[in-house]
Amino acid sequence: MIRFGPAGIPLSCKGRTLRDGISDVHHLGLTAMEVQFIKVNPLTRVVQEEEVNRLPFEVPQQLLVEVGETTRASADPAALRQPLKRRQNVTGLTWSLAKDYADLAQTRALARALDVRLTLHAPYYVDFFGSEESRDRSFRQIQWAGLLASGLGAGLDVTHLGFYGGGSRADSIHELAQVAKELESWLQKTTEGVVHLAVEPSGHPDVFGSREEVLELAHQIKGVMPVLNMPHLAARERTAFSDPVQLKALVDQFVEASHGDLYLNFSGVEFYGPTEFRLTPIKRGSIRFDTLAEILADRDYDVTVISSSPLLEHDGMYLKLLYERALTRRWTKKHAPPPPPKPPTVPAKAVPPAKVARPTPKPKPKHPAKPAGKPTRRPASGHGSSSSQRSRGRR
Image 1: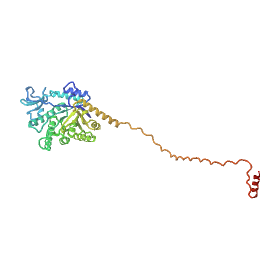
Image 2 (image 1 turned 90 degrees about the horizontal axis):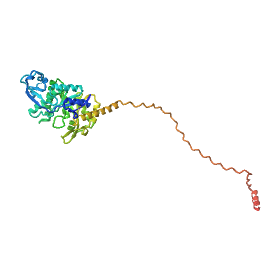
Image 3 (image 1 turned 90 degrees about the vertical axis):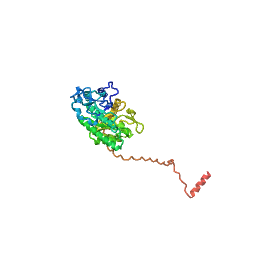
Image 4 (image 1 turned 180 degrees about the horizontal axis):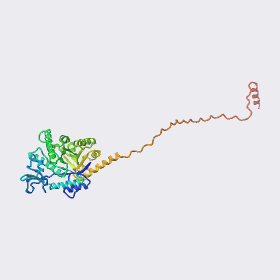
């Protein structure tokens, strides 16, 4: 199955709640949506008296995401499934798209009823090589995004892994791989295997996320999903992926690493300096979806295509239209009626070569006939001849 949807609440949506956005996505004919968990407002406090002996997920008007101290080492997944006790510290979130887990459950039910697949993007600012506080905050924000994704029924916690460290590139990649492994393990325990970590590439060369790094991470750590972010890869590799053979090889690599469930992010992109780029509407960008649509029309795996264009749902519907055109061309070519059979050819009889007509010869002219009369007597030789001459002379 293939799904299309925007990265966030549609721009044309009249309401601004998450459920309004899901309903609007459905009415537009789209079937996917990437929820944006961008602004994080955590608050750590002591458990209140009316919350004692309640499970953290059952507290009304609260999105509790941690029980205990607010450090990565003490964020125990099991504590979220145990009743709250007096004098415990809890950390809650203030999020404009949901007020508590019951609200998330209603949104999850609506998305399932309308057949809209949800995923969730964690906050964009990530730094695992900064201060200890920055490192812990980056961990916790991705963990909190996983909890919200679980409440929404979203299967992916999408994120990137931030800048490289100050040491060698190989050491930074190794350490970030350990970070991803720890996060995926935490998500598996906390969400009971519902949510997986999805790592996307980056368009900046100073940030973890080249094609090889993301694919290798997915191969090394079980459960980690690679995100085929086309504009970021195009900016990273400075290519428009216009060659169908090159693009097919790229798609096959990500399909293999994601075990047949491709998560794809698309928008237009414009290149500037060596490390500068900007996301644009699809029709204005340097990369085109037409060639990719032809490849997806011939697929045998599931795909979710998310429009991260500034036009969001408008370009999401445009991507769907391009795919449907490619699918129609493929179907027409595959099911075209066979050409009518040619009539059997009968071998022609051998015709003898035509005789060349020779010109009829003209008849030879005959000698003219002698006039009728007495035959002329020739004079006799001797005396007769002289006597006749003499007689003619006398006359």
